Image (cartoon, rainbow, N blue to C red; front, side, top):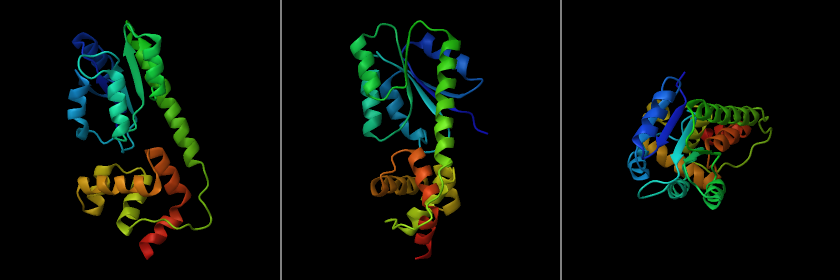
Amino acid sequence: MSKARIIIVEDELSVREGLSNWLSEEYDVSGFDSAEAFLNAINDFEFEDDLPTCLLLDFQMPGMNGVELQANLKLMNIQCPIIFMSGNAQQADIIDAWQGGAVNFILKPFAGPQISSAIEKLFEQSQSLQSTSLAIQPAKTCIDVPISQREAEVLLLLGAGERQSEVAEKLGITLRTVKMHRASLKNKLQLNTLGELTRYCHEHKLSIEKVLQN
């Protein structure tokens, strides 16, 4: 089973390396020294896969700050839980982060166990939400699903927990094409997160499979 993924965006080298060393035994860790560096590498990550992910984000950095990066990720429709880190954030800053969707805000200096505890709690909550979603019973009546046959194939595979790279391999298409179909599914069905997609696929599996028969 793949490790959960932690992405650290922190301009202070000692903090970034300390977090990486502390977390790397348990998680798949990537580190970046700026928001811009992370955005430049954004295509290296498959945020639509089923790998639990957490972004440890420094609030105040040279160039783009943490809240600005948070806003950019939202514009890119990238759903990733964020734990902010800051040494001197003001109350208004913290409110901005919460309103932007942050799941936690940890003040520096902090200890490794404090970070580990926050991450473990986040992943436990995510797993609980996913289990609740999967417990929902499939709909017994068919509905009209306005997607193409190829989009239906992609939807069923993603809903079954396949990563985008695995979907591309199984269908014999490129990863870029899979991402294109995923974007189309978001627009047509308003499935913005992997949880929403999984739930929709589970509830309407028969209707989706019917598209393949047309």
